[in-house]
Amino acid sequence: MKIQRIAKPKVIIPTASMADIAFLLIIFFMLTTVFRKERGQKIALPLAKSTERILKRKHLAYVWLARDGKIYVMDKRVNPQRISYDFRLRALEDPNLIAMLMFDKDVKYAYVDSILEALREAKALRITFSTEFKRGGG
Image (cartoon, rainbow, N blue to C red; front, side, top):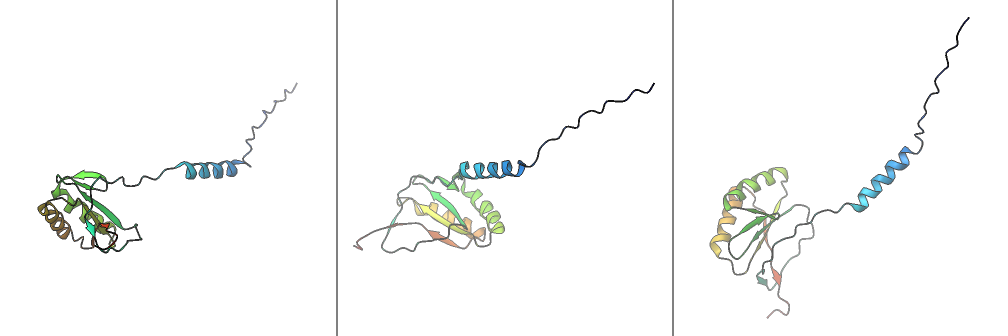
């Protein structure tokens, strides 16, 4: 007598809607992701009679200098010796790098000079100073 084996039913996982689910997940994560912006530091910028806006913010690296001499690069507190190393690496990664310097209007010039020397040593020679525009011209 022959015994017939009972074939196990094959499990089939429907994958027709997998692409739809993946697409919906991608849309969900794109809509709910928050990109972090630089918070900046609370400093009083010096006044200027004329200014020029920089519209492209892609190649900017921000440097804040508070009144008490605290230095922040891209929202991270650094010491003056670290600026040269930091900007040397940034300049190698991005040859179009522009250092946006935001100094408090009451800061001592010795602090400003030390930052400018560190940037010169790092070969980060494209520098701009951020100011507040004084309306009225007088």
